[in-house]
Amino acid sequence: MALFREISTDDLSFNPFSKILKQWMLISAGTEKDCNTMTASWGMFGGLWRKNVVQIFIRPQRFTKTFIDSYDLVTLSFLPERYREALKICGTISGHDTDKWKKAGISPYPINGTVAVAEAELVIVGKKLYSQFFDPKLFVDKTIDADCYPDKDYHEAYIYEVCRVFEKAR
Image 1 (cartoon, helix red, strand yellow):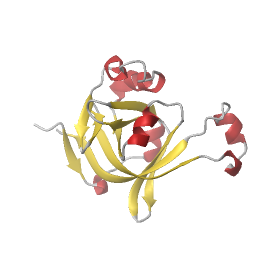
Image 2 (image 1 turned 135 degrees about the vertical axis):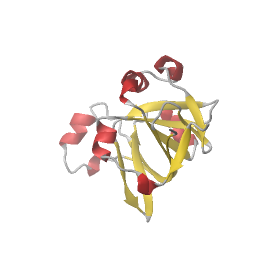
Image 3 (image 1 turned 180 degrees about the vertical axis):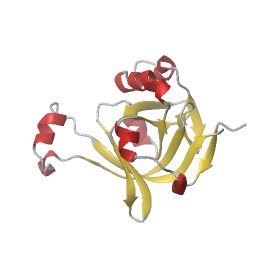
């Protein structure tokens, strides 16, 4: 029996604010044998360039960024609340020095030519369309720079076309 079943983007029904800001997500890229994942609580869903898109934001020092930059596909995996500790681990421990998959008690799952998190209840597969670093000169609200970037480690914003959506098979 398959672990996930594909659904249409039209079948998605969730509050994007609580889904990302409160539930969090794991951003993963790479292959089953060479991959990394990281927790994120910043992101956006919407429409752009006549496509369904997601936008994610990665700081330059994150190890996962090397995978994001090396591969065209990414997954966003949303896990049940019982995996909150795993999300915390994946958000604070670098996969550069540690097998954070093992430490967090989660497993990479090959899907659609990339890797997702086997324990997810929802997986979104995206194809990279665009990326650009934040330019601090462009902040209209100047408090954002001091409040969110005291180390001047500005995020790179990535826009992905939503290619496929999977939910846990029942």
